[in-house]
Image 1 (cartoon, rainbow, N blue to C red):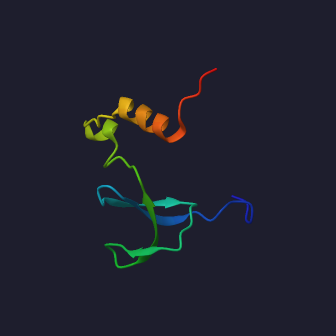
Image 2: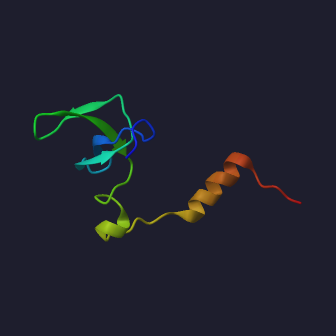
Length: 83
């Protein structure tokens, strides 16, 4: 690779906010937060909302979404518009 044209590719820990599972991989993402990993080294920490540990496709579980309740909540908040 040519020097100076590629972003810094370094080890980063991604942590699932829902399950608390974490994994170490390499990425170009940066973070001000750090975490001490199992090897005793400090790595940048990126907290994600969904990972394979919590995504319904990978876990086999489904969440029921109350779509009718969401529509009513939207209508209460913004009203209905008649044309």
